[in-house]
Structure formats: C-alpha cells, structure tokens
Image 1 (cartoon, helix red, strand yellow):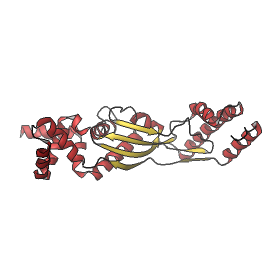
Image 2 (tube, rainbow, N blue to C red):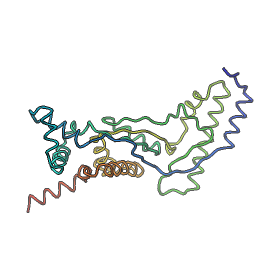
Image 3 (spheres, rainbow, N blue to C red):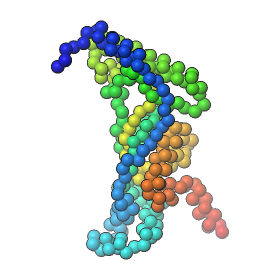
Image 4 (tube, rainbow, N blue to C red):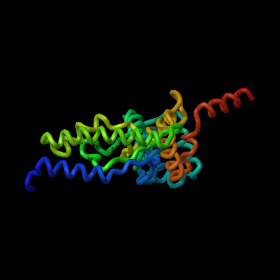
Length: 252
C-alpha cells in the first residue's frame, strides 16, 4: 500500500483540483443502446400461448403464415386493451444524461424499470461538475449559483479529508449540498409496458403537467423506440385523442 498522505499533501492536492475546476452547462441526451430482438414476435408468441391450444411447432408455423399487418394488429390490440404482461417481456435500454431532477422522477417508475446511476458516493467532484440549466433563468447568474454550490461542496469535502476520512467517505458526506441541477448519467432499461406508461405520464401528462426537462428526456426515449420499431407508433398515441375519435365514430 502507498504511504498515507500528510494533511499538507492532501490540502495541496485538493487546491490543485480546485484550480482545474470546470463548471459548465450541458444539454440532456438519450442514446438507445439495445433492445429486444424480434420484439413483435415475442409479444405475439406470448399472446398466442395464452389463447391457443396449438403446439409450439404449430404456433411457429402460424407465425410464418400470418400476414405482417395481421401480426401487428394483434400486438397493437393487446397494447390498446392493456394486456400488460404480454408486452412486458420486451425491453429498451438507454444511456441517459440528465439532471438529478429528472432521474429522481424516472426512478419512481419502479415496475418494469431498471436503473444503474452515477454514484455521488463514489464519484468525487473535486474538479467541478456539469449541470442542466432550466429554461427561463439567466445563464450567468445560474452559473454563479452552481459555482457557489461547488464551493460549499469543496469546503465540506476538504474539511472531511483533512479530518482523516478518505475520498469516498468525504464525497459521501459532502454530496448533501450538491444541487439537483447537477448532471448525472444512468443506464435505464424499461419494458415496453413501462415505456408506454412513462410516455403517458411524463410526456402526455395524464396525471398533470410534465416537468420540462423530464418531458424532453422521456419524449426522446419514446422517439428512439418508435424509430427502432416503427410499427409501435399507435402504442404511443395520445389516449384522449383516440377516445375522442372512437366517440365520434359511434355518433356518426
């Protein structure tokens, strides 16, 4: 093991890191890195197992002989009727960069959502951090607030380090003063069912007006899913619009 650093060496190291400080804004980003292969087939097969007495080879033959539009119609029908288990087998995995404001909202969608997130316990911000700036605030004044926040963080971090705690323990305690605007990275995997629910709540606003950045991030998640699987477009259409169209059809 390397020799333990003296207080003077620790203080010098921290001061050098502070001198390198970068506090700057970034924009949220979403990257689709993986998805279930043969997604439509998996959902279709799950449904046919539920509702058919055919053997597995017979179901495979049925799949091969069924026209594409009929396969799609069956799967979209399942989604519209809310047969959630059949389309919970399929997943989309993303790398997301956003603020802690957004990550705190997404982690609440516990059913069908798995997240690994950048840890503020193990990642010290000695040389600064990036942040997401909300709309409608002055760039310079907001950056000044972020710099003050980092000053407070480093004041505590330095105090803990000089008291004898290690980097991880010091970061773990000092993180209490970090702002929610700080950027965070996470790998997020959602089932199709969870993504549809995320779209309904965080994009369309079924339970109230979505928060701005959260809406942007979740909209991008949905856009990438639709781009990868174009046949899924109806699954993400606004429910109220569809219900209105159905009512108009009944009247006519």
